[in-house]
Image (cartoon, rainbow, N blue to C red; front, side, top):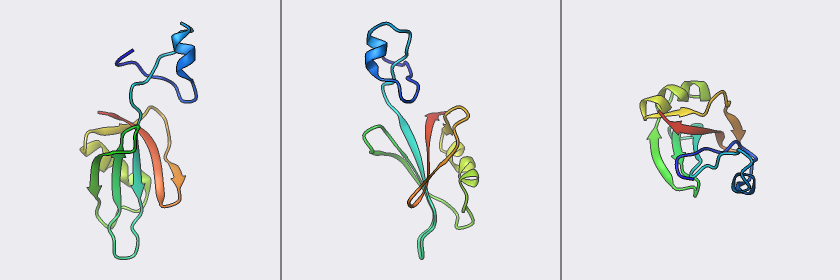
Length: 99
């Protein structure tokens, strides 16, 4: 099952049952953390266990997730398909794949 992907919300049971559902080995997420007082904004890509794969300090002028996309691409990652950034307590998150 290596190298295959799984749509969100679909369990591995369907894939194992041969229902044509692909299984994902790892889901990576980007976390854009907005600048807090005295801190620069950050962009962190985490694997499915929550371990940081990439961590970038962004320029203070980056204050929206759309602006973080350019830095995400420069680091070798892109948002998955047409998925949009989702609001989080301290910024925004989105699933990502290697470019």
